[in-house]
Image 1 (spheres, one colour):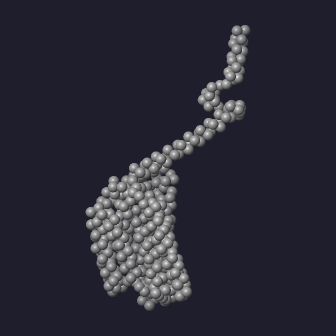
Image 2 (cartoon, rainbow, N blue to C red):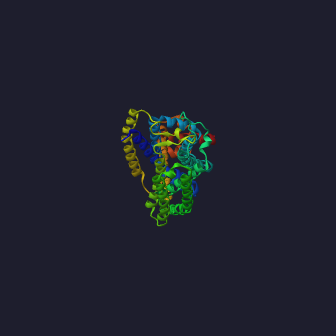
Image 3 (cartoon, rainbow, N blue to C red):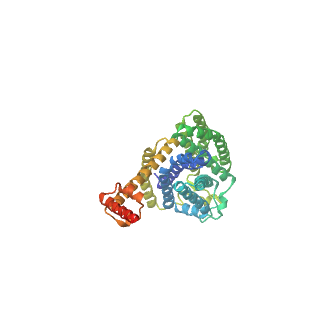
Length: 406
């Protein structure tokens, strides 16, 4: 197989895999602020993806490495022209990770509210920006004859790209709802289901608008396979709503997965062999041949990724199986109670050790410790006084009595 095509295909697989895996994380991050009513419910939402979120970002880093090494001109043009959008995307991901990690470190309601909104915006902004960036590949960026981004970052915004960003935000929310229904108990699941059913018409309507604008404004309208896949995703998304109504959650989650997969795949299929369309002139578009590295580099990258991608897939399956179980508010409460009980046991053990050493010091007549304790405390810690101390106290009492008689 042509090394350029293979490298482009591997990049597409890595980026699509990241969007599918991180997609329901985005959705859960938005839904935890909207659907959950209590802090325990929000923590249950976050616990469904928190142990695995760092593994998903490996897909994005690997995709960026393939783009950098295999197609450096494309990498340079995108990162120089879309620096603001990419900076906001990365900053939002960092914000979300910090909010998830530190929300439990403080018990104040204001702190947790701040973290909850950090998770929300740290999920919504990347979801919107991914749709905007991917749609911009089709719509076109101002790439000049030197294969450089010659416009401003705001040229990435148009009605078409904003609709695409909104669509991906809605799809990620539906994808996250489908995943939550597989991971939480029925008490929370029923509320998530009702919210997702209300959200589906907006997702389907936005998807139809996106397809119409794609056919009218981009080259995808002339690519029958891509147009067919996009049309099929509308019916698949409608099927997802039907499966949700029938409580067939696995099929509903599969429907949102196929919808995202079809939408991203249609973009890459319609672009091929071009990766970034130039809005200035078709000849300036960046394709997988004029923007690629040398043949040796492409072969090395392709062979390396053929080893790395199966390892990534195996790692994700292993980690998902390790943490896969249904979560509930009652289970989280029991977990918190167990944690508090363990903390009390540790405190009791520390007090026992302290009392033991204090008792030994008292029995060895350590005056420094004895003088700092009250008589009542000494009686409690030391137990019954020994005979010598009783004799001393009796002699002191007799001396006082003799003085009173005289």
